[in-house]
Length: 151
Image (cartoon, rainbow, N blue to C red):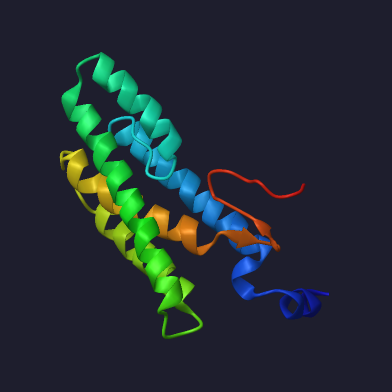
């Protein structure tokens, strides 16, 4: 049966891949929210809400982290959108996961005293790249933050 599953759809659309990238996205969002100033690397809708709260409470450093997360997320989406049209290999999505792993390993070794402005933006960038590159799982629309396919 598994062989038919591979023949019927592309490898990057497998449900197992969706589960894995969802777990990674959830972990990175939990890390940035709990350890890096209440900001989300992937959940940009939440960052807009948190940005509004920071602005009303005059928390400019917190607002700046949310703004940079939003900007780097937008940059990541734009990069993958451009890369989709100009890729040189069928395995370009794997390169995005390798970049994401590299960023996570580097950030994992940074001290907690490192500024959130240096830690959150690269995580937002790679989360946007992951979200955009893996936008269809099991032949349905997919996002590691939202799911809008049939159940």
